Amino acid sequence: MGIRAGHWDDWALEGLLGQKVETGQRVSLVVPARNEAATVGAVVSRVREALMDTVSLVDEVVVIDSDSDDDTYAVAESAGARVHRSAEIRPDLGTHPGKGEAMWKSLFVTSGDLVVFMDADLHDWDTHFVPGLLGPLLHHPEVQLVKGFYDRPGAEGPLEGGRVTELVARPLIALLFPSLAELVQPLAGEWAVRRTWFAGLSVPTGYAVELAALVDTVRAAGPSAIAQVDLGVRAHRHQALRDLGGMATQILAAALRRSGVSAPHPEWSGDAASDDQNGWGAADGEAVLRQYLRGLEPVERVVPTLERPAAEAYL
Ligand SMILES: O=c1ccn([C@@H]2O[C@H](COP(=O)(O)OP(=O)(O)O[C@H]3O[C@H](CO)[C@@H](O)[C@H](O)[C@H]3O)[C@@H](O)[C@H]2O)c(=O)[nH]1
Ligand SMILES: O=C(O)[C@H](O)COP(=O)(O)O
Image (cartoon, rainbow, N blue to C red; front, side, top):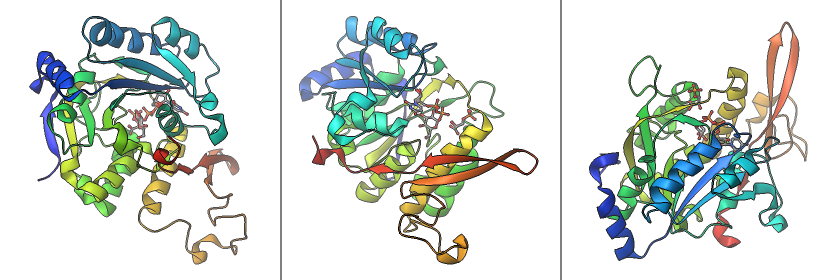
């Protein structure tokens, strides 16, 4: 069997609530957020009202503030979330920048057996995303991870992915991980996972968290451990192309690592790798991305490529 596909309204809310009670599982919604004061409040308050205050589908709404320097913390808190600063969770484990880091750290401050992730920058979305993502986990015990997919308003065609999706993730999947090719939106930030499964995965601290979780899941448990659900329409804030270069570098690093390439072949790097260099021109756990904004003058961006080991060792 391949990757199971469904639609968010395949599961009636009543049925999900019944299944939740019968299986005795708790649900956490986790929203990683870096400088999302403009949108995080609505994400929190709408899910709270529809799925926590009115019915008991979600047991906790937790925002992980990922080193924001705007009002994300205060806005999320007054909208009804429990908010934790990523850097302050388990200080004994240190801190790193990035979305994957915030998601990894969330395992130490949440208790749900099922964890639903949603981005904080959504501006066209609805609360049915959450029950839609929970459906396969509540009804199919073999499913460990559920990805959302959606139409993107303004995209050239229906189901077209974002720029990194089309230019990096899909080509990587075609070349290295073809069993994931059925996924419509492999980079979707809206996904759900069993806590025990996520806690057993190595987690890139940056934007490669999604691709890494998919690759590691399909390798360990096969395509039937993954489901995808049509969530309807989703729109989000767009990053500048040069910032997406950092995201693409992180995704490529995670994919190469999973293909046995942890540093360039010596022939590629020019210099002999020294002890504290990984051959990518930076210390271990980072790469230097050189971009050109105008003329020959480079701008160097240090891109973290670090991974956290499975959290279960620290829980
Ligand atoms: O250091 C960071 C950076 C981002 N975020 C949050 O993560 C979410 C997604 O970040 P965003 O910069 O909006 O990512 P996108 O450009 O939309 O990237 C897409 O592709 C990424 C790679 O798979 C996914 O991680 C994203 O969820 C997905 O929306 C948002 O809530 C951010 O606030 C953090 O918590 N910490
Ligand atoms: O999902 C992606 O590919 C990246 O986040 C970029 O998305 P965008 O092109 O919609 O900004």
